Length: 260
Image 1 (cartoon, rainbow, N blue to C red):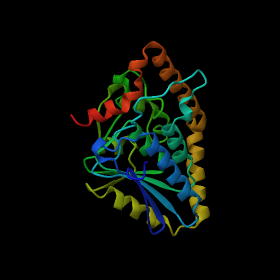
Image 2 (spheres, rainbow, N blue to C red):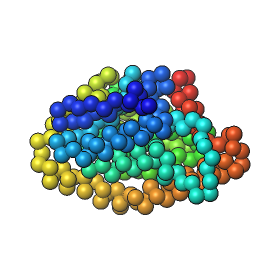
Image 3 (cartoon, rainbow, N blue to C red):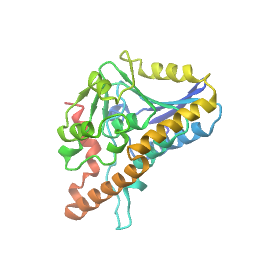
């Protein structure tokens, strides 16, 4: 069960979803992604909750998606069905303001979580990376959630170079919206959302509507749908070519990159 790896708590009007898999740098597996999705939906449906923080325990945000060994994928299989894809779609469409609180590494899916949130609070020393290209595929599952804040060409550069982006770089690129001292990202994110709790709900709804409208200008749901189809193609093609080397273990490779 995911209860020991994802904690759901409440601080006043702000819900906190904390990834707690420290030994794996908070790499998110299918059960954890489903638990995070459920937490987002529950808080979003609670009228007394005015903000949601997604954070990671142990000094790291998220080292990527731990998909483990996949089951058989038939011709009708789609990446959209995967728990990670559902989680990112749910976060991006959430009607409640969401702040990602980033300490340490945000790799692959972790960067996607930061991009899908309304705000991203980066702590001093936090680092951001998309290593998938060096593992044999473009990060279609994550990239569409970054272009609301970053230029598409900057996302492509980050993906193809595989370089590590510092906090200063992430702020300059627009991925990180707020900063915090090391160890204070979660507290800063909670304070940020608590500070907005007194704003009338219709104003907050209008703010979210504005952001969704801006997202549609850059492709929004259409871009996510298209990217998910590309990710489906990539994985099915890899399965057909060499089932043992398909890029489903990419997240554990991502995790290894943060141990170097």
